[in-house]
Image (cartoon, rainbow, N blue to C red; front, top):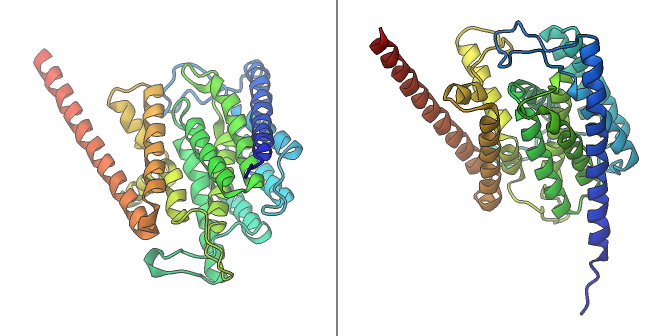
Length: 370
């Protein structure tokens, strides 16, 4: 029997076109954005004690990411059946507006929180981007709407903020966003979900074009405009991936078992880092949104690694978690998620030990020189 694989060739050409066009739009747009930013003195805040660079750098790279993603989505993406185009792009525009205001003039945490809440409500209620089950975690399966809606809203807001918080060093948020969206794209292709795969590839291309200018030495940052958008698309892909891999009443089996655990592994770096810093800030009596230099990338930098080394180390770690999740998915969601949290806690503990050893070494050196 001869099988016709021509449709796969056409499909891959389609995905390649999406990536290439999205990359080109982003790549071409950024030099103009850098020029305007320099002419108008729209630089990153140099006086902040959390900055790791010593010269003004524009933080409007998210404008190029947004334009590229939006243009390519409208031209090529076909995801109306599963995810309404108008709802998704409306949410993206709202986040783009609040992110741009923050990048240009600053905005208070309360304003950003309210707008993120509005976006989450729009996606959950109008776009049906929500979790309808806990898939056996804590022995809970289907959940009613009055629980599903607030839980989904909180998850969307948490992941969006998580990407915003890891955008602290050159290339990190973009590289993690690239890993996340590329992984979901490949998973959706395996599931036969062309619409969702094209959505993910639109963001992949936009990030690729941006990263050329963001790796050390960085010429532009993505800013809140970019990190909020990357976080939003990432969490939308994650929730849709989980929901499309449910056991249904008509006997359809999912393409991927333990889909929630796989989604957690894909988002593990921003999820764990945000959970960790929020917990520490709350335990210390501070606001969870009060900025500090206690993120995982700051801790790795303190060990003596460069920006690019830290970025690649975290991206490689992210890929290892994805590999584990895909190969151990028969273990179930409950076991895998707690396994991942345990591994993250172990990595955090080892990092703390190394930092203490390094600090003591510095103390001895300074003492001897006295």
